Length: 144
Ligand SMILES: [Zn+2]
Ligand SMILES: [Zn+2]
Ligand SMILES: [Zn+2]
Image (cartoon, rainbow, N blue to C red; front, side, top):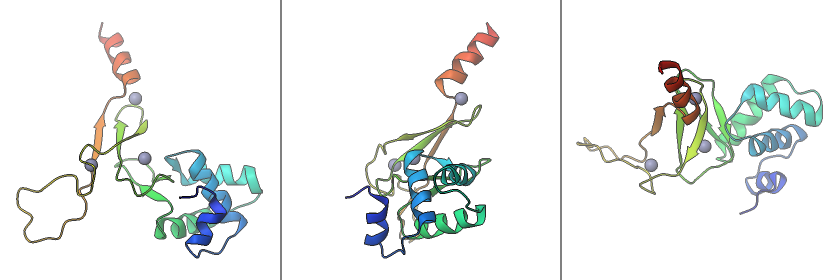
């Protein structure tokens, strides 16, 4: 599997544009980046790009499975290039820090419902919420 953005676009039959390449690089370079962050990184690379163009490019890349979109409750959508491995996220409720964690079960769906009601289930949405070590230790310091 290649990580060259141009090669990835080609393999998926997506027309290669400077904007899409810049968006791919931004997402690959900063996992869990927001659309605003992508726009900022893309502008640094190619100059002018509108937020709408960023959303359009992200939409194409997500649609083709090259980019994964995650939208934690209360947070703007985030984008990452780590796709297809069924990993999950740990999110700090206090500072919003979000990190990857491998799936404990391995393959989707990770969980089996008590009653599947005849549904063909392909995914259980798993997000681990809590406090990151830094916030947890600051919380302890405050209460001491
Ligand atoms: Zn935190
Ligand atoms: Zn991730
Ligand atoms: Zn899992």
